[in-house]
Structures are given as structure tokens and as C-alpha cells.
Amino acid sequence: MPTPNRTEYAILGLLADGPKSGYDIKREVEGPLSHFWHESYGHIYPVLKRLREHGLVTRRRQSRAGRPDRHQYTLTDDGRAEFAEWLRQPVDRAPIRNELLLKVYFGRLAAPGELKRVVAHYCDEQKRAVSLLEGVARAVAAEHGSTAAYPYWSMTIGLGLKAGRAVIEWAEETLRRLETMEET
Amino acid sequence: MPTPNRTEYAILGLLADGPKSGYDIKREVEGPLSHFWHESYGHIYPVLKRLREHGLVTRRRQSRAGRPDRHQYTLTDDGRAEFAEWLRQPVDRAPIRNELLLKVYFGRLAAPGELKRVVAHYCDEQKRAVSLLEGVARAVAAEHGSTAAYPYWSMTIGLGLKAGRAVIEWAEETLRRLETMEET
DNA sequence: TAGAGCATGTAATAGGTTACATGATTAG
DNA sequence: CTAATCATGTAACCTATTACATGCTCTA
Image (tube, rainbow over all chains, first blue to last red):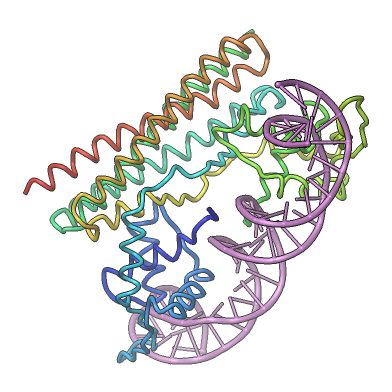
């Protein structure tokens, strides 16, 4: 199975909620999806073009007073069916490539204390990411807590928090282990 | 910052421990590194070629009685320096693309019960992965517990277990939430 | 008038996978 | 003799990123 083009489904999904421009898509990805997804313009526009060629979306030029023209993309019935089909398929665990663990694995070949610095840095970054996400969780609950989308949104944040905290725990434990090892 | 070619460093690291063939590299990746890293032949050999062109490794044909010839790759001083430099650089959190969370985020658009099926499937897979890793942890401790590489190896497994268990917890909690939501 | 935000897209390139092609040696 | 394992590599393809190119509109 070749890695499917997940950008296609991300875009189809965003359009399933209503017509959008490429710019809108980028903005939405940078908002509520940003802690578990990302897209670049350089991929969004070509994918949009291909989706159109395959009849999954249609494009319409839109002129709005006081703002630049833009292209609005709308999901077709075929597009909606394609999206629904993807949505119901089980997700397999993706093959992982963890550069931090690669360095840990090779840690024996590093100068003393170097691995500790690397792990400590990662731990700090992770702590910042988690506290940022905690803030997002509070803000989202306050501002969107009563929308239909909220529970799902909240679930995605939930995994980010749980996984993030697990990494922090591991990093702190690992730092202790590394210190103990140095003491000999 | 363009995504650096991490395969180069993975290979450099494996060679830092002693000369190896492309085949050896693939086997080692499939062994102790398999729960956090992967490489394909179709990438290993071209990278090996490039590393050689850059003077980071040398190649030597090796004839061994009773086995097919093979190419043995050895790290040069430049290669070792390059690896050491990479090893001491801090690792930034990689941008994530989590297809499961993408489906969760769009869960509102799925038919009732569909998202539950998807999450439950993922949870099962994760449980299997964790119990496999628990077995690996025991086996590694028993067979390599006294080697110099063991503590580092063990740390990589440690993160796999912690993160994996966090995902399971999240999935079970999420399933309960989805059930509660259905009851209305 | 300059800068920020809105808006769309292409070209070059990188990183990586899969499928293909080839061949040696050993164990059953 | 045949299957499994050892062994090396290339070609085609896909996904995605970065850099580039362009232009509108509003606000300060």
C-alpha cells in the first residue's frame, strides 16, 4: 500500500463543512488542527487542482467588495462519498521515525553529558508545547464549548496532552537515569 | 530549515559501531531500532553511495567462503566527525501528522458508531504493539542486560511503552465519551 | 506610501517507498 | 531441485516542502 495522499482527505474533510478557498484551508489547518496536522500552500493548491480534475470538488470565482477575488471550492457528491469512505476506514499505526530516540540509541557514542543536554532540551520543548496546549484547551472550552464540533475538537487536544505528558515523564526519568550512569 | 536527510545519520550511526554492509544495516534497523525507526533498501543503497561520494564512508568488496560477496562500508574520520556533530545537536519536536486525530476531528461528519469503530480498532492495534514491546523489553533485558548499549536501548523502549500506554488510556477514555454522546 | 494581511499559484528540489532486476549459497 | 536467506542495486513514482512570482486591498 503506497502512502495514500492524506492531504486530499484533509482538504475534502475541511470542505465537507462548507465551501472554502485555499487560503481558508490553510488558515483552518493552522488553527484547530495545528497540534496534529499541517499543510503548505505548495501542496494545497496542486491537490485542489487534482481534486477538481477528478470531479471531487468544483471551483467558483468569487468577487467580494473590498477584498481580493478568490476561488471558492465546493465538495461534489462524489467528493463527499470519497471522504465518507475514507472516514470509515480503520487507521493503522503509522511507521515511526523518532530522531530523538535515534540519538538516545546512539547515546553511548556521544561525549559524556551530551545526550543529557539533548534530552533536556527536548523535555523543555515538550513542556512548552503541553502548556501551550493546556491554554488552547481552556480557550476552546470557553469559546466553543457548546458547539457540535467541540467534543471532537476536545478529543484531539486530549491525545496531545496525554501523549505530551507521557513524553515529559519519560524524559525526566531518562535524565535521572543518565545522571546515575555518570556517577560511576 | 529543510527536513534533513535523517537516513544519512542513522546509517552513519550504525557504521560508527563497526563496518557493515547495506544488508546488515537493514537488519539492524529491523531489529533493535524497529519500534522507532525504519529504512528501505531503496533508500539505504543510494544514501550509502552519496555518503561515499562525500567521503564519509569507504567501500570494500569482501569475499567470504560459503557466502555471497558483499560490500563492507566503513566510516571515515570525516564521517565520524559528521555523525558526532549531528549527535550533539538538539532535536526539535517534529511536525506531526496524525491521521487518527484527523478522523476524530471530522468525527461529527461520520455516521453514528463509525468513529467508535475506528478508535476501537486503533486501540486494539496499540495494545498489541505495547504487549509486543513489553516482550521485547523482557527479552532484551535477559539477553543484553549487561552490555554497554543496554541502558540506551532500554531507554528507547521506555518511551515506546510510555507513549503507547498513554494512547491506550486516551482511546479508552475517548470510547467512553463517544458512548455517552450516543446515549442522547 | 508602506506594510500587513488577503489571495493564488508554479518550479525546483528533497526525501522516501515500491516494484523490479539480478544473482550466490545453503538447507531440506 | 527448490525454497529461504544472503546480497546489491536501479527506475519509476509519490508526497511534500521551500523558494519564488504575482497582485489586490485596507489601514496607519
